[in-house]
Length: 201
Image (tube, rainbow, N blue to C red; front, side):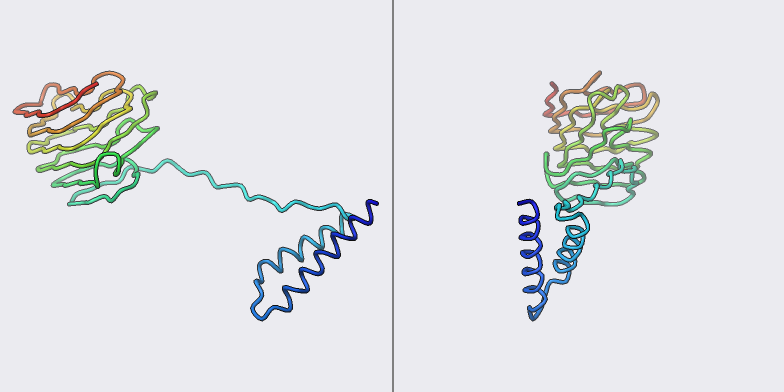
């Protein structure tokens, strides 16, 4: 009985292989696959050999990218960024364009920006990373406009400036939630700030 089943499998594979070889435009990859499986079946004495499943390659954590210009990010999820000089970063909307980092301490870093605009995007972190900062100001940033931004799931502070880092400008239509320490934390160096229409929870 066992050999009858094995012979039937061999006969079926040979018939299918013969049919494919007689096609005008055969799919060579299919023919090669069937030929290999037929040879393996014969070598194993009639025991079917499963097709191997390739192991997926691990996806590395994205490294921070630097932006010193006007950039529009379409909908999608992007790795951490560092903004310098004169920068304008505009997304496709809250929940549509997402700047995200799971294992880094700073997600969106602003460093020595003469003029800065950030809008229409989400900054998302990893709540379990205790030192993580969502929107992190370093150096001198005297002309800031942040609007229509959601910041969530950040381990430490949603918005923060380093002690002594100058930050001034306007923040409006912000939603900051589920941050481990402070939603918004402006420290020494921040001045002349206008914060409008914010939701903190």
